[in-house]
Image 1 (cartoon, rainbow, N blue to C red):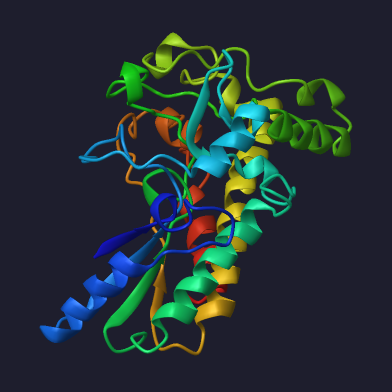
Image 2 (cartoon, helix red, strand yellow; image 1 turned 90 degrees about the vertical axis):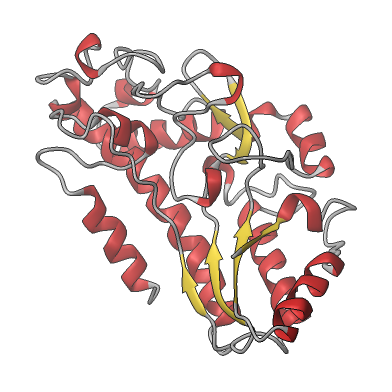
Amino acid sequence: MVDAWWGLVEKDGPLKYNWNGYVELVQMVQMHGLKLQVVMSFPKCGGNVGDTCSIPLLPWVMEEINQNPDLVYTDRSGRRNPEYISLGCDSMPVLKGRTPLQVYADYMRSFHDRFKDYLGSVIVEIQVGMGPCGELRYPSYPETNGTWKFPGIGEFQCYDKYMIASLASAAEAVGKREWGRSGPHDSGQYNQFPEETGFFKGEGTWNSEYGKFFLKWYSNKLLVHGESLLASSKEIFHTSGVKLSGKVAGIHWHYRSRSHAAELTAGYYNTRSNDGYLKIAKMLARQEL
């Protein structure tokens, strides 16, 4: 398996792709009679478990982020995370006139066109990266600079202006405008435990009418992001003979608590009373993964 890093291939400018290194690798794999799985990797590399190199987001993308910091995920204290572009702006033309979803699709289409002679024979699987570390999740437990340490509950990543606008719209739709002003005020900080917070404790706000509204909105945004990416990949690769796949994080800490706090901040609405993974599985099934 190899990551096809967006941060390497399109770094010379929008729609300027350099696949040369990957061509050499694929030819080497073919020469030795092996098969290859390729990950469409859209996050930065560096700062997480197992990262041994540093591949930041593209220079021209960072230019846009520097001008508009709300393009990246933001926590309650205003800390920005340039690990992955916020899904809140998925459909906004914020990257030199293209939306993030268009940029991801163009990248996958370029890969398809460059490697079409190897698809289904040498390259047998395309894994679609859908978030930090290629996983369908929010960057709720960033290890960079010691922000988070295991087994902290993490924090909700919904404070860029695009996510807040979406939250406000969802709250307006249910007649609760006050719910759309911010994320939960009592959800604690990265390295706290569930029982230390008002939101995640056993009988906490997570199980209130407001908590259920917020968690449904937060998790649904993630599902829509994943399904949009997978729909694009399915359209691009559907006749190529490759298998498509995605990755879900295995967030096991605090699993025995009622709220499953660490899963909730990552975008998995999985509690004692709500099966969050079933919805993810159904979404993957709709895209025939």
